[in-house]
Image 1 (cartoon, one colour):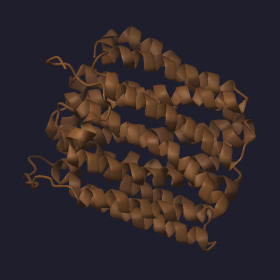
Image 2: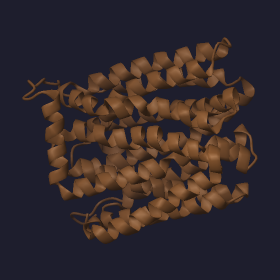
Image 3: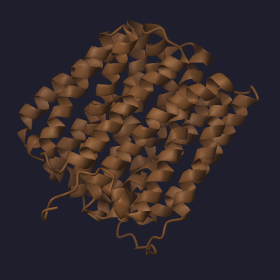
Length: 409
């Protein structure tokens, strides 16, 4: 290979970094269980209430702690061992899944208990997500950070493919409760990978300022860095208006496409297959094409495909559109995440990732899913998805005209 050339093998980072390989394998197995639980939780909410608004509310409540706690969690992540925080959070998530299994299996589950467990999951995620995201650079270094983030997205989407299929099988054969049991067991994989890692000893540093001063420092940095500020605005609009279509998918599958849990699982798997392809594309080709141009393409393609999906009434056509939607959605997210982590100083990485988590998980679910569920209950699920996608398209047209530097990133 000529000097300076990079391999097109998207799995090169896994081959070269043992700790990241352990992290990726364990996390991917665990995410299969997480996607199983996500699908089962949405379907269980629909069975318990038969209300699109309450389906959206379950997702919103699960993300409310991320919205409220992520900023302070980011300060915590920058001051304490990311590794230890991830191990502790993953252990507690195992307990939460086991309790959800017991309540459902014993017949004691109600919409109130389901909301409680979703809330508990969100509290743990508020710390675990920014800690896990900002830990990647410690496993691969800065040179391979972009590719590692793309591969991290590929694991997420591989789980999105396998999880819904597995959940549909378990639900049909054993019942919905056992989906939560499988998720509890899946946490053993990520904990095993974490405990097998050989990382340098973490050396604590004395905090130089209060938590509020740390947050003020972060926001000064964001406002003083035009690229970071533009990307944060872009990811906010797309998270609030675009991502909630996944939360509303159970209702779309049943009421628009007239399919059951199996068909719903196939639709989610199509998003995952497309997302997996998008992540692997970024991991292999991302350095050979200007990332700003790829981001511009994804910024327009993602909402355009969502508009088309909102009007489709034929299940095979919906599957094709979701394949392409998943591809562009993950391209968009992985590119923004990679660019942000490449430019942020190490001392601020946890805080920046906490803001990113707040937006992508917190705002998308609390504001986006709650609003989407409310709009869907009034004007219909298809209109709710389509109107949000059209607003994204209009914003993209304005943003790239107002901030042409986005194309040069």
